[in-house]
Length: 115
Image (tube, rainbow, N blue to C red):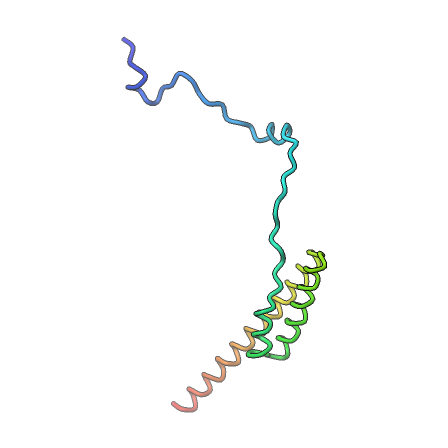
C-alpha cells in the first residue's frame, strides 16, 4: 500500500542541490568592492576636551591630531588619517578619564569636609 506524498512531509521525490562556495568563488570572476567607512577624526570630542576638560593640555593635543586626521582624509591618505584619528581618540580617552577622576576626587573631598 502506497502512502500519498502529501501525507508524509519528510519524504520528497527530489532535492535541491546546495552550492559549494569554493566552486562559485573560482568560477565567478566579478570584482567585489568592499566599501570601507572613512576614518573618524573626533574633532568635536577634542573640542569638548579642550574647552571643558583640559587635563594636562591633552585636549589641545587631541585637537591637533584630529585636525591632522581631517587634513589627511581630505588629501586622500586614509591610512594616515586612521593613524592620526586613533591617536586623537586615545588622547581624548585619557583626558576624559583624568578629568572624571579629578571631579570625583573633588566631590569626595567636598563630601568629606561637610560631613
